[in-house]
Amino acid sequence: MFNIKFLGTANASGIPVFNCHCTICKNYKSEGKFNNSTSAYIECSNGEIILLDAGNDDLSQRFNSKKLKTIFLTHFHADHVLGLLKLRYGKDKIVCYHPKDKEGFADLFKHKLSIEYKENKPFEKIIVNSLAFTPIPLKHSKNTTGYLIESEEKTIAYLTDCAGIEKHSMEFLLSKNIDECYIDACHVPHYPDTNHLNYEQATKLLDKIDAKSSFLIHGSHETLNYINKNNINLKYPYLIVT
Image (cartoon, rainbow, N blue to C red; front, side):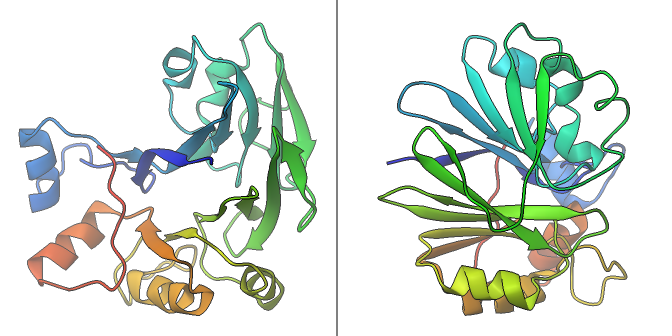
């Protein structure tokens, strides 16, 4: 059975935020903790690594002794692709699946080096090491796809960076028996950002998807500080990685 492991579950700034003195950031600094931007990986039974997003700058060091088989990008915002700037200099070819995007990020398409970019197609399965990855269109400021990851034993929905789930994507999710669902919940209610969900919106979507286990991800320091300060009891927990 495969497991998804998170390298970070915060928003683009990470936590603690540079020079921030909110309670959350103060606590993180005092305890020497850091939660990086949201990204994850799967270590396959043969030892090969599959990345879900590649925002961490240290990926080339973290997985230097492993075979990095494939990367599944949700979109080309900086906090999801920065690691590619170094990974592309590796000696082994890495296949990187991504949603349609003419610009990509920086000069990644111009200087591909060891990265082979392949545009995914919504709702068309991609099989890697007996795992099926299905791109799911999400609402965001850049063209974005989450992924449904399936094996014979487990089904996981990875839905980071979204402002909502359109009808055809929700119908697809509802057709599946999902064991674990991870969804963007960056903001507090009424926050003026139309590119990410707040935790109340995310909770309603998780209620509808009805996975066996559900988690909020992509949380900001403002949101976590607000929840703690106001003693808010969440139906679904924020997944925190430090």
